[in-house]
Image (cartoon, rainbow, N blue to C red; front, side, top):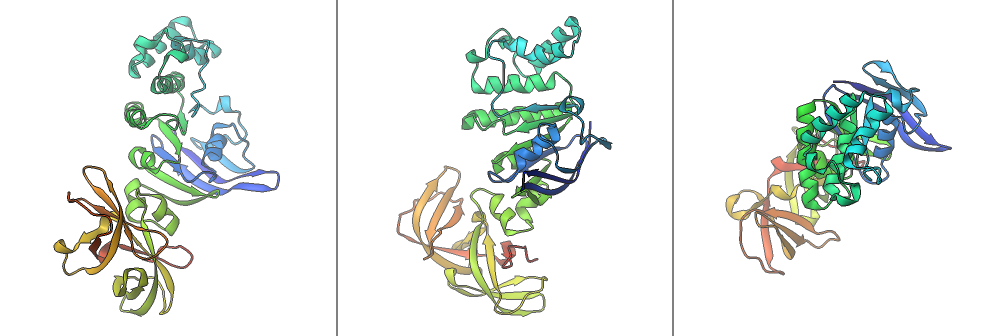
Length: 363
């Protein structure tokens, strides 16, 4: 197993800076996921680690050895691409064998490695097929197998599931999780899909505009985000944000006015410095609204039901509360709903998040 460190890593194209001084340590055997919106720099950062993009400044260390200027072939890294990148004129067997043939491994060793890799990824019956005769999921398994067979120190995955349908993505997430559990190698995975990040990662690195916004375990980012961007990006449906104003401060508490909900005295425990009249953002996740029947003491509001997304085990209610964006509420109880009806709900202060005018979390 292999550790990796990035020290003040930057990337520029001419006069355009795209990666702005990344510092990150990835521990041996860890599964780390880079996640963020399109254009945030996550794939560029992965390609810099792989040696496919030059590092403009800073250092890349693998097992405490400076690999910043080393070519990709010397880094002990294997990469799985979004596009599979299989040789169309080679069978599955040929695609798996190719990296070992290039390395001039003995034929007997190559044959043994192919059989072991094919068995691990359920490819044995497909070894003599060409890529065009495979499904998307099978092609992706071959691409992963071609990386595994080299026994690299670190695996890199660049959005490997984005071309697959929902069912195949689920199957491949399971395959990749099992693979990490069995191999124990360090793995770095890039995706724009926060569901993949939440289900696969030991730690998630949230990127925006070439900087790291927060690093942490999936549940840490979900339950304790550092800022408004992370709070809104991690979680599906995303957190609801409401404009609020601090109307009173004292004894480690703040009192809020929340005009969109018609609330004038929502009290939260906040130790962060703040002042009366300060404009803030109140964050509430869809699952943290409460039915009035089960929480009569909670602060209450109501909204008009504009749309109901029925998923069987739960419903998502989209409420019109008189502003541009609707409020999204998770309702786990199975009941019939009528568009246009008034829905009354409660809020528990313990499940509220507060962010200042710059988007930083107020704790």
